[in-house]
Image (cartoon, rainbow, N blue to C red; front, side, top):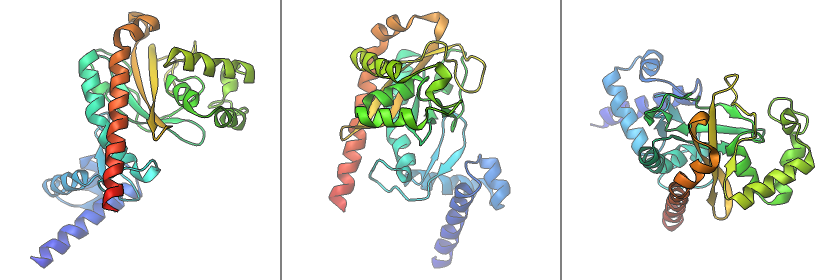
Length: 271
């Protein structure tokens, strides 16, 4: 029995090593990289996902790991992003099934926002599916504008000046100066949600034909990510979308925040 347990542990660590170094992988790619039978891999991955160490994205079907084991709790750092997705996903799924249009989970990086999960595969509508891991201009995307507007003013301005000369991920891409940036922050806060910069069409296609409405996900009063809802721009004006679906999106955001706090409190209690 001890030999069987050691072999399972060794296999599990091999899977984590593959996911940590080469990066996200499908079951077939893990099979080729490890030489393990797919049936064994499925059992190992099920255990690792149950422990919050590995997450399988619903968007691209790939398995992802983190360097630090998140365990049962949550703290707002990169080592707990898989846990973040696990806690947020049931609410993202429920929102998409309720309103029909999908939502993404995005987090801030040093120079951009990044999509770490999406429910776009669940929507009945034909729209651009997006790519997990894509870096997204935070001055043009609704997700980034929601995040920036939720930051303290000084920190938001620091982001603006740090990226001012970046031609792809900076504000200059939209001819945005400090005055117009401050105006955008004020309008977003007054509106209660963020919308895309006019003319922004995403990062991969010339224009993805989507509109977006985003809210910050708060953890102990500070934004750690955003819930970003997308729809076909030609189907509904942003103001009507907000009236029709705004309450459901706000409720989803709040439930995610509550789940993060509950998980963090459990970790603190156990510690």
